[in-house]
Image (cartoon, rainbow, N blue to C red; front, side):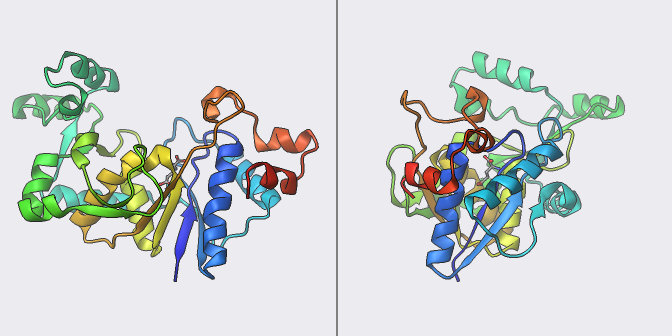
Amino acid sequence: MLTTRFAPSPTGRLHRGHAFSALTAWRAARDAGGRFLLRIEDIDPTRCRPEFEAGILEDLSWLGIDWDGPVRRQSDHLDDYAAVVTRLRERGLLYRCFRTRKEVMDAIGDAPHGPVEAARPGPHPAEEEARLLDEGRPYAWRLSLDQAREALGDAAWDALSFTEEGRGSDGEHGRIRARPETAGDVVLARKDAGAAYHLAVTHDDALHGVTHVIRGQDLFEATHVQRLIQALMGWPEPVYRHHELLTGPDGRRYAKRDRSVTLAELRAGGMTAAELREQLGL
Ligand code: GLU
């Protein structure tokens, strides 16, 4: 049965781009007689707020979107993600990273081979790590691409791929070779939350039997490393359908940080959900 989801982060109110994404996924599920799940991705304690979660539920209901089963709130399941981190760690696939974001970014600037290489800061020398641990400094866990490749073996690494039924950022379509190296050694457990985006997404998609990941093209690049995590964990491979991003009248994409008009504001201005759906071509 086709199972898909909408997985917003409650870091602001939803805008037209979210409405487009949610409606696209919801339609796909309903047209196929499948399941549509709602997941609140709130593991970033610095940016997520409960009032935005309430706003999401209100906006989706206004759009006429219904979902199957209870809403999953990721912050309620941090122990589950921590258990996956432990398993990966025990297999030697993760390393501690005490660096600040700025330190990692500065290193990228200095790197001889550009950003790709430098997003792989590598483990700290043993003595330094021991000292930082001793000082009680917080650390993240990063996935080592080198160890991951070794764990999978060269043949499985080279065969790593996914099916794109939509379009990637470069218009890529069909069976696509996964390029996890473009993401570098991603953080799988944040310093402050014990989990991180790529891990929580792939864990939850597997847990809920998501067969189709339908989401915006801005997340296409994330697919490469998410596919690697699935392979390492033996989780099933969903089909991907990345849709184009909605652009405003000025040709720029709608985004929260641009303070694009929110659904709440459109509603307050008198727009109906039917009018918005028509505007979005849905
Ligand atoms: N929570 C992510 C976001 O709001 C989406 C995750 C996903 O669809 O895979 O950008």
